[in-house]
Length: 113
Image 1 (cartoon, rainbow, N blue to C red):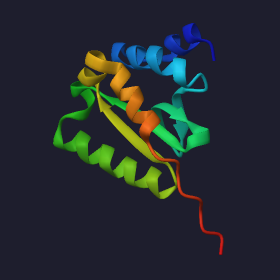
Image 2 (image 1 turned 90 degrees about the horizontal axis):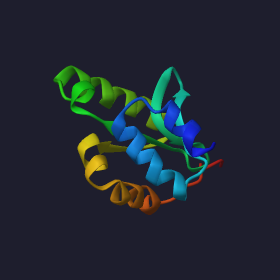
Image 3 (image 1 turned 135 degrees about the vertical axis):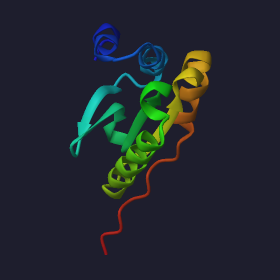
C-alpha cells in the first residue's frame, strides 16, 4: 500500500503520525484491520501483530479499559500479539514506538504435536 492510501485510511492524527514513520520499515502495514469481529488500528499479519494507538477519548474510562482488555484477551487467544501505544507518545516520538515494534520478538511456533 502506498503511503497516501495508508494515510487516507487512518482515523486520527496519531495514527497518521505512526503510519508515516512505520511505513518506512513496514510497507506491508495494514490500517483498520478487521479480525474476529474487531478492528485494529494497524496489523502486520505476517508477524501476527496488531498495533493500537490509544487516545484518551476512547480508551480512558473503566468501561473502555475493560472492553479493551477483553478484546485483547480474545485476540491473543486466537494467536495474535498486540502492542498498544499511547497517542501522545506516538505524537511525541513515533520513531521510538516503531522501534518497539521492530524489537518485538517473533511469535513462537504453534506446537502441532
